[in-house]
Structures are given as C-alpha cells and as structure tokens.
Image 1 (tube, rainbow, N blue to C red):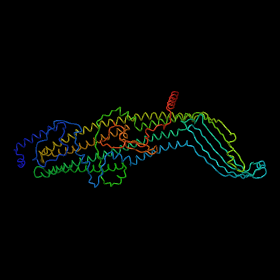
Image 2 (tube, rainbow, N blue to C red; image 1 turned 180 degrees about the horizontal axis):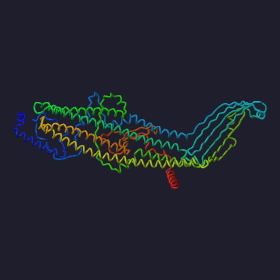
Image 3 (tube, rainbow, N blue to C red; image 1 turned 60 degrees about the vertical axis):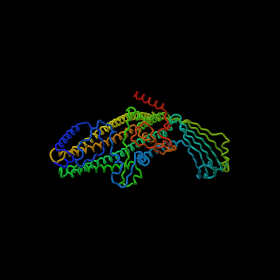
Image 4 (tube, rainbow, N blue to C red; image 1 turned 135 degrees about the horizontal axis):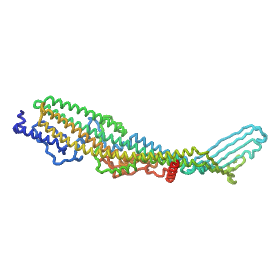
Amino acid sequence: MHPPILRAEETSFQQFLDNAARNMAEANRRDSLQPETPLATESTPLSSSSTDTLALPPEPTEVTTAVDTIAPWWESIAFSGLLQTPEQVSFDLPTVLTDTLETSPRISSVSRRTSIAYEKIVQQNAVFDPTLLLEGGYGRVNDPVGSTLTTGGPDRLIQNSVIASGGFRKLTRRGAVVDVTQELGTLDSNSLFFEPNPQGNSRVSLSITQPLLATSGEVYNTRLVTQASIDSRIAWQEMRSEVEAHLVDTFQAFWRLYERRCHLVQQRGLIERGEQIARIVDGRADLDSGPLQRIKVQRRLANDRDRQIEIEAELRRLQVRLRTLVGSPELAALNQSVELIPLANPEIPNEAIDLQDAIVRGLENRPDIQAATQELAAAGLGISVTRNELKPRLDAVFDAYLSGLRGDNRFFQAFGDQFTEGPGLTATLQYSLPYGRRAARSRVREARYRYQQRSEELRQSLLTARREIETALIQAFANFQLRESKAITLQAAIREEQIATRRWELLAGDGGPTALVLEDLLETQKRRTESEQLFVSAQVASVISLIELQKAMGTLLKTEGIEPVRPDNTSQIELLQTNPADSNASRITAHQSDWNSQVVGESLIGELGMIELDDSSIKEVASDSEGSNRKE
C-alpha cells in the first residue's frame, strides 16, 4: 500500500482499484478500435508520478486518414544543426539545381561532347569553301643532247625558268570541281631554235569537272554534312538524357539526405522518451519498480543508440555523395565536418496524372526516341547515297585556256596579250561502269537492311518508353497510396503509445502480468518511431517517384525550366535555367525559383534545316525496299 498516493488522489483504496480496473477495460476496448486522430503529434512527456491525472485523453469524434492531419514535429528540428559541428550550410532544392548545372563536371563533360559534335558540322561544311592556290619557283635544266635538232649545235641543253602561279579551287554542292589558275613566268635557253630568247609567258586556264550520273546531286555531295548534323542531334539527345540522369541522382541524394535527417531527429526523440522512462523507473526504485525494469529500459536504450549511430554515419555518407554530385568548388573547399542542411518541403501535387497524356508527352519528349528517329534518318540517307553510287560513272570535263608570249622576259606584256587572242578549248565525257556492279548492289542491300534495323530499333524504343512510363506511373500511384497508409499507421501508433503510457502510469511492478506493461510501452514507443520514419520515407519515395516519372516522360528539364542553348549561334552549349516551360507540369517541391525567362542564344532543339534529306526520297527508298523484299 502507498498512503501518499492515496492522499494525493483524495480517494479510498477501493475507489483507486475501481478506477484502475475501469481504465484498463477502457484501454483494452480502445486497443481494438481503428486509428484515430491524435490531439498532437509532439512527443508527450511522461509524468514523473502517478499523482498526475489518471484519466485517459478524450476520444476524438472523427476518424481522419488524410496526410494533411499529420503535423510533422521533426521538420523544424531537422532544419537545424544535428551533428554538433561548428559550421552548417543550409540550402534549398533550387540552389542545388543551379550549382549542379554550373559546376558539375559530368554535365560540363556531356555539353562539351555535344559542342564537339557540332564542330564536325562546321568541318564538313568547310569542304565547300574555295581554296586559294599559290605556287612559285625556279628551275634549271642542264641535259646532254644526242641530237643537233634539240639545240642546233650546243652539246648540252641549258634552260633557266622562273614561274609563279595563283588561283583557286572549289567543290560545289552538286559535285562539280572548278579550277581557275593564272601563270606568269620567264624562260631562257641556249638552244639556237629558241625564239624569242629570253621570253616572258602568261597562261590563264579554267577546268570544270561535273559528275552527271553517279556521285552527282546535292544529297550525295552533302552527305557528310548531313551525317554530321544527324550525329550532332543524336549527341544532343544523349546530352539531354545524361543531364536528366545526373539531375535525378542529385535530387535523390538531396531528398535522401532530408529523409535521414528526419530519421535522426525521430530516433533521438525515441531515445529521449526512453531516457525519460529510465529516470522515472530509477526514481521509483524504492516504490514499485525493480531491477528487471531497469535492465529492460537500459537494453532498449542501447539498441536505440546503436541505430542512431548507424543513421548518423549514413547521413554523413549522403553529404559526401551530394557534394560529389553537385561538384561545386565552394562545397569542395569547405571542411568535411561542415554539416549540410537541406531545406525541403515534400509536398505532392493533388492533380491526377492521366496515363494516355503521360505516354503522349513521353513519345514527344523522350531523348532516346528522338535519337532513334535521327538514327532512322541517317539510315534513310544511306539508302539515297548508295542508290546514287549504283549508277554508272559519267563525268563531263571542260578545259579552256588563254596564253600570251613576249621576248626579253616581258611577262606583263604577255599577260595583256593573252586576252587578245581566242581561247583553247577541250571538252570530254568520261564513262566507267564496273562489271556486274556487285559491290554497289551489296551496299544498297546493306543500307536497306540498316534502315529496317533502325525502324525496328525505333519501334523497340517506343515500346520501351511506354513500358517505363506505365511502370513509373504505377509506382508513383503506389507510393501515393503508401503515403496515405503510412499516415494512418502513424496516427494509430501515436494513439497506441498514449494508451500504453497511461497504462504504465497506472500499473507497475516487477512480477506478475504487470511486469509486461513496461515492455509493451517500450515496444509501442519503438513502433511509433518506426511509423514516423516510414511515413517520412513514404513522403520521400513519393517525391522521387514523381522525379522518375518526369524522367520517364522526358520532361524533367522542361519541368525544372532548363533549356540548353547555343549563345550567338556558336558551338558552345550552355544550360540556362528559366521559368518552367510547362505550366501544367507537376512540381517536385513547393519551393519555386524566380529566374529570368529570357533565353540567350538559339536552342538546338528547334534548329531547322540541318538535315538535308527529302522525305519523298525516303518514302521511295522504303517502297523499293519493300518491293525488293517481296521479290525475294
């Protein structure tokens, strides 16, 4: 018997037992009920003595399962320092996004690779630039002669010449090669038949070679430019894909860091509640608690502290991972003991996501589908080129020249004389055709097979895109439902802990069935903390599933307002962050960044006219390919 307690309650011992029995029956009845909305989600401090009120908390009148009813007490603590470090760095998601775009070496590397691909277009286009040709030199001939008709007397032919020439050569986009050359020179000889001696000469010549069948046409002669353009577009889509993948990794690291910080706060809350029970048990050692209760409490606290150490270590590993993904020199220069504090708000939009709309957006925006389309265009170009090479080779060659001659090395007068007389002309046709044209026919068949292969690859990309979008959408819906379920579980766990706490305040002791009350309280505290941690994990999983869905649809960059551009039409690629391009896109966080909507330079996405491939020729090649397959 404990008279002080009876006096504090101002009731008889029998009334005390009646109240205890009634409260126990009420607790058992409530244990079988559905979870109810708690009065508060804050950690409820345990009373230091049973002299406090013995009544249970009032029953809520309404059952609520919405996530909005959860008041996360741990967030405000998670946004403060947790690792007892001298310095902390707080940042939100837009800051991480901006720094990653500006400083990440992986993003910089893939953008440089795209710039390299664009430079290939310039290099292939430069083939059609005119080439300046200059030549000058001195020559001396000193040969013995075996006939007096060569020199008219001297036994050796000695000639001295100085020549200078200049001109240009140009390859046109239809395959013609144009050469224009002007020559000026002087020549003297010891031959008696050489007249005038010395002499100045001049000659201007024009040469044109035009393919008429094979290797003719703009499509064939600009094939390397077109292929370089296609390769640049493929590299562009690969850059988009890798940038999105890197941003997904960075966002995941950000949200996982937020998740672990919340887990750490929740674990410390569990330890604080356990330490409070330990203090009460130690304080009641001479009253109604025994060594068994103290051992149970200490064992549970030891296990909880072990879990806290694991969470802290994982938190530090996530900080290192986030530093690496962002790649900021400022973060790298900071001491490794500096604590990174993500300011996150895992709010999920309530808009329903339609499957058909998600698939349509994915087919329009996914980089792999765009790249597969460009691969198909390259295969179509290959058919056009090989069909051109299947024709016979017929070239028209035209040569014309004007020349002048003066004595006493007067080459300037010879230059004027060359325009006073008529030109010399030569026009020829050159024809060639390999017997059987087996190599050319094989190249045509190879190009058709490659076109069919690229068509199937594009079809496979479409099927893969649909599968990934549907999978991501299913996972997102599942995570949303799990988030609601974890909220209900958390509410039930909080209510269960409150009931177990009141039961332990009423009953204590070291023997009999009442010895299990403390064990039950410790278990309910652990279950509440696990429910809190699972609720936070479900929130983070929901956010990450939205990120994965946006990546599956190929709209992550648009959602985040990121647009790659070429400033001033150069080959340098920059990733600019503007306002979100799609106002209906789901945001992954409630934080919004205010960016200037002005876009500097020209976007490569909308660049037109780079692929010089006629659609009709592709259709014709495709029909020929189908006809060939039917014949086979």
